[in-house]
Image (tube, rainbow over all chains, first blue to last red; front, side, top):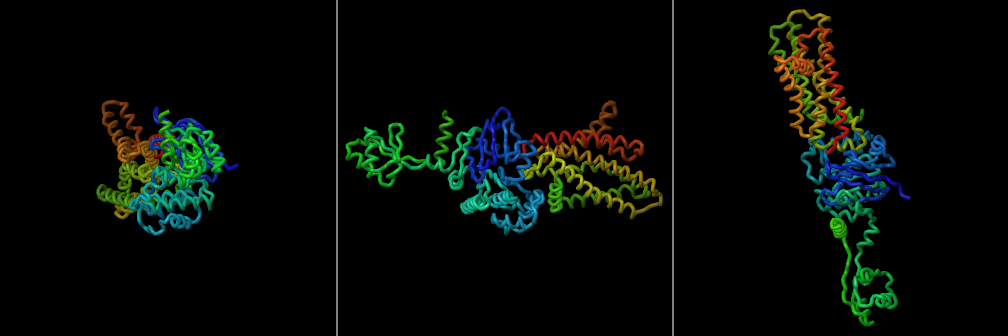
Length: 306
Length: 241
């Protein structure tokens, strides 16, 4: 059974009467790349801030590396690297000086570690340039460098690809993959760029109005979102028999008097011709399938309508 | 906590601001000496420097600003807190760093003052007994400065906006005592309130006897204890942005 790194139980954070996070329970397993998805103001950043110790939950329980007490959580936070909200550094210091400051603070031995992480994120040639003169992309990279500097077991990244150019996004994706596969680092990240998130996340958590509305693995999501042919016929039972006997198609599903077929996506005419020749009237032939964005919109829209 | 202080000292000694601030303090110390003690003996000159000390608590606004308030301004505190440092530890670490910087800046300025005073030595009325009393007064002044530092730390934590922090501190340390002093001419309670302010005590250091030094010491300790408790309480509950 995979080790549980982070768990929240009915965690709540209120600002006045507004519940930014409302009785939220979720868990994160070792090795996951967990993509937290939600609209603006859904509670993603507040949740990450509670995990990072930047804000205190009003109620509920937070467990990090099996620690739930205040001191225990602080000890556990030594094992994580964070970049919550925008990357923040001292504007009058260079990238090296900023990282050196945090290296001393975290007690990481060896000044060469600073050079290593700067090289890792592609900032090794910034020299004496001050942080205040950095572009948004450079700031994001420095934030990532800080998050990984202490070789953390868990990295928390809030909107990490904001401000990165397409090449920067691709490089960022490679860095996350590399950390996850080579260093076995668990990653918890939130992003608005769902297409990008869908390329790296292994687990998704959909959050809306402070509540976790669904937690699903990438495999399950792919299954749910995969493209299928949808046919509506006058005799469903007969059509299914023909599918099995004549077309050797066993992967289908009947829902709402429609048949969802996994095969023949590229040659739907084979399916319709066979059915028509057998005397079945096909009244509808469509395709279905969602990408992450459509799935999220359906989920949140459905939830909001409920 | 040692690592926190070490890191902060690394950061602060890597910026010119600290050296500029120390330079200004030194220049003011020498200028003050040259302007106000031209004909005085060395003893009078040193005694006069105690009067100058009443302004030093005001400089704490700058020390605490670079140690703590600017972390709010640049949102860098979140990096520290999310690294697993307890809030109490961070707060105490910042206070110790501020104290080190205060001793560094004020110490250098004091040395400059002494040097400029001794270079212009008049008379030979300097005795070891006088120097003992003088250094005792300086130590008490330092305690009052530490009291002001604790007060500045509360405002630095409570007010995220830099301008508000500065106005609140100056208002509390300078304006409020002056208001008390003004009203104290007619109403006794305000005279008492003036006496329990840092500025009120620092101003009186000039002509206070050793036996009366317990008053500024008590006022300083009162400010340190109350501000320390309130400051940590606010910081522990505060949302770090």
